[in-house]
Length: 190
Image 1 (cartoon, rainbow, N blue to C red):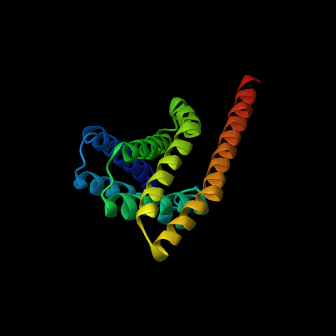
Image 2 (cartoon, rainbow, N blue to C red):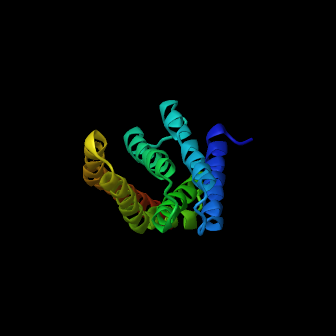
Image 3 (cartoon, rainbow, N blue to C red):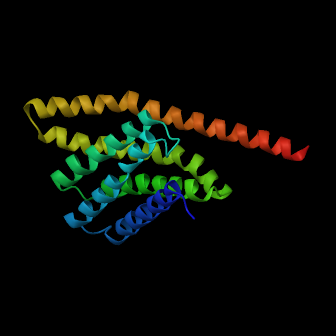
């Protein structure tokens, strides 16, 4: 029988795969129902925070909350609110959901190939996705006035330490995983 966390990881994989198929099917569409569906898919991952809080997941709370809050802000407050569904949005969403699909597939399967993808794809996907997020916030910021304009400037400034923290966190996870894999291989070879 599958444990709850395994079912959640399978569901996370399927949600990511559904989002990727929606992105592919709607590449040329500016249909806001597409963005709404994608926003709901991203919102599904709020459950990850609950999983961490109930110790069902071993993920770290702070990096998870940082990434999730950023994505929810971008998808709901920027893309959905302002009707963005262009190539920049599609590239950003591909980065997000390829990462998520691979991550949850790895958590579900613990497959070596998927593990390799999990700890290597982010090297390109995180910076590219973050750049797209900044471009989208910048578009809205240029069109705004008053307090909202300054708020969005602060949001963009937060990307500097936020991106650095999350990227370094993944580099450390990658090193830790490589170190553990090497130690396991040496133990196996003895």
